[in-house]
Image 1 (cartoon, helix red, strand yellow):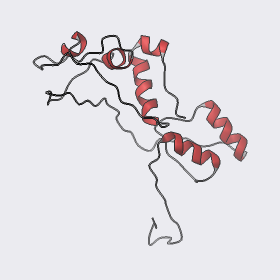
Image 2 (image 1 turned 90 degrees about the horizontal axis):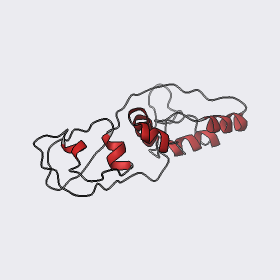
Image 3 (image 1 turned 180 degrees about the horizontal axis):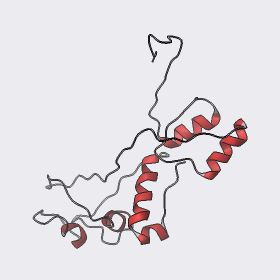
Length: 153
């Protein structure tokens, strides 16, 4: 994509490849800058430093929200979740049913089925995963102790 009038020789090529891919490309030097929803960890910062002989700068540019999404047959309205319910019910599997009291209690009047909660997740290195698991670590002690924050690969 050409940037236009100010400097027609400058081109910007945007590719939505996930935070892990962005970190890999900026470290390898195949791109000049990259974006990630999660910061580089110490190992990634060292790899960049070792390859280039100088450090990388992190600076926030955008604030975005990460929320659970769901598709439950027969439920058409928005659901509410207590802070610890996603970690406990969805991912740690304590009560992996939609009608669990922790979920039903936050959704009075919604007829939730006794169906299993099936988790779908990304397979690539994802800053979104980092953001989500960082949140779960802050609101759910069991999650923090057993799983912790996800790393952007």
